[in-house]
Image (cartoon, rainbow, N blue to C red; front, side):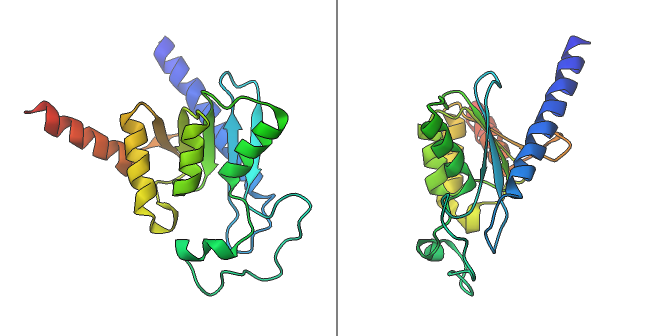
Length: 182
């Protein structure tokens, strides 16, 4: 009975936080994608929103400098800050510890650089809306798998807070089953 209550409570909390991350995406001025994140500190005391777009006090692009090209190789042309990075920078600016925090991302798996920064900043859990890799970046998938193996928590939830299966945790489970048979 208590477990059922706690699970319902966690689902409601996940839904609320993921919807806050979605709301943060409304702040994005990017012409290509509107992405949002919510960084929730260790005990939920602080919540920091992030969105992709140019740094504060910078003008938004009139046209996308990456257009018509796509992919990771064109990122150097873009002046936007990724939503995950903006959360970390705001926390640093305000002197808020990110150790043990949870990042809710209204997007797929963060890019390799943001993933490295989240791990190094002590983020304990990353919750995404889908398990797509950033522009097909296999390295971010490899980093995510290694992070999960080392105790990081990665989950996929929908806007209702319902946990969905994802390929990364399924890969870990498959590896575990294969090694435990030996």
